Amino acid sequence: MQYVEQQGRELVRIETCDLIHYYHAIYENLRKLLVGTYFLELVDVVQPEGHNAEDLFELLVACFDLLEAQIPTQVMVRVVELKMLRCAGLTPVLTACVRCRRMLGTSGRFGFSLTEGGAVCGDCVRQGPVHQYVSAETLGFLAAANDATLQDSVGIACSPRILHESAKIIYPFMTCQLNKDLHAKKVLKDVLEHIDEGVGRTGA
Image (tube, rainbow, N blue to C red; front, side, top):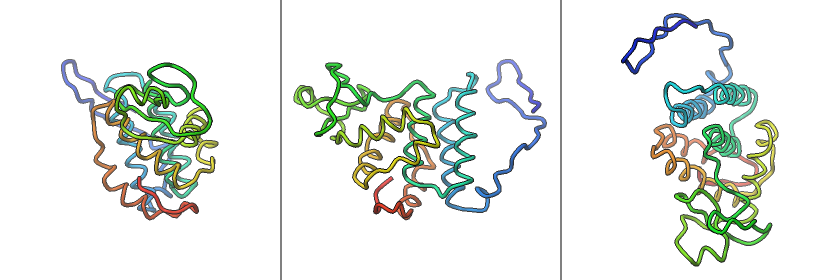
């Protein structure tokens, strides 16, 4: 790739580039294309312009490779959102309370604070409001997905309730931390509601 960057200007003009992989399967499938567009917008939002983004670029390529080979699922979208946040250094706290720092149990319900950056234990929930209540199973799914590889993460089995709760905290957390909303998300929500996960229908 050859590009021109002029001092004092925000935009970089790409002169030439060589196309290495076309991702034809994504281009031919509207659902995959919409999900891929959302992934691209995620990268644009989480990575400030002019910063080194090698890890994020490698993640994006891996996401496109996965999307080319598989039908997009709600699990895939949740996992990619989580991986993008990790690349940006914005991983939510999922295994301990953000207020008292105690480790959370493997059962029960907890709170989730967008502004404080993660889960809130039952004792600390009484001390102040939280954005959403979430089950230990959902936090466990997100923690496992965050630690596993992208390929392994999208294969983790989860219930409709876990998918629903994950959607209620991950995207709002992202927009809160980045102070930005994503245009592609509005279209993607309608698309994902019609994806057959084999576990029922949930919101995106």
